[in-house]
Image (cartoon, one colour):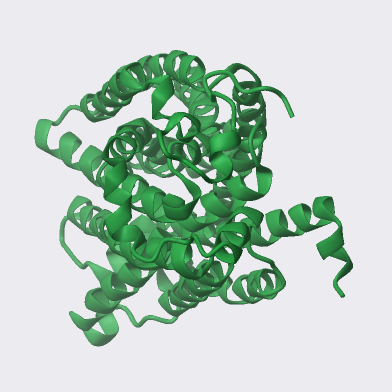
Length: 446
């Protein structure tokens, strides 16, 4: 008999480590690609115009996000039918395997037009698996945490995402610093992707030892799991819409800090690579450090008021960041960047918990997969592409603020209309574990 199965604390800790280790691989991939977009553009999308190559590279980056909803539609219902554990194992194999293969791809110079086609196909597989990851892992962690702890527990998924991106960025930028641009363009860009292979094997080993979440197992033993979660989820249209719009700001500011800021500072503002690497690292690490504080705070005092205040400040900070850009120096841009990063950390600290609390256990993975992946695709993955396009269209390096501020306004409107009755605890006819949870406008401390 497994001793850990008799020790809830040990079981919860092992579940947490197993879930987050695989999550790290997903975000490591996105970090590597975002930081190496310039080299990938030149290797796979040959053009006389460097900006066009970069746009094509960002388009491939964005495409993987537009595939995410399809992955969510496939894996979300699967997790609600057969369990979170088996689904997490499957998506990890797809993500780590496809990332590893990307490092082996021949370039345009070797096989011509087939090279970008293969790149796009691999990015689609990555997006498909990532789409299945988020709903499943959020449900898994939230259900292990239980009422009153979900903010603190699920915020670590965001911390892991940031650390994965930092790891990818550190490897990519560190290699660029050591090898130089020429060797990176020649072969160095492959190495960060190839590292996903051994990292994936380690994470797979850990996930294979997990048990499913207690809430899902209770539903399964009672024979109350959803037989058609994709059809049933549309009974929660308002919850789906609220998650969609609240995640809009989460998505855009995430990719502003962790991917586009690097390209913006190096290509548009012409900061040196050392400054860019340092700034993105400090900003991202600062965001990760405040996330547990935000998650714990909203567990005790409620999510809506906190997210409204932070969302307003974050929207203003993004405007400040871009308006500072003309004639900016590293010294003048540092504080706007830090303001955006810290407010991103606080806002993203509680959005995963909020998602899990707006949807019941039996269709939670499906609901999150549907409501989360679409705004991430439209407002997150496409953020670098839209930002680069706006600058090229207008000739104004401050123009991306239109896009980012709009995402903030959309999320603030959704938070304004969020009601106490929207939480699962108050849903009529709810008979699962969630119905025992007190009002999440003000959660008691564990």
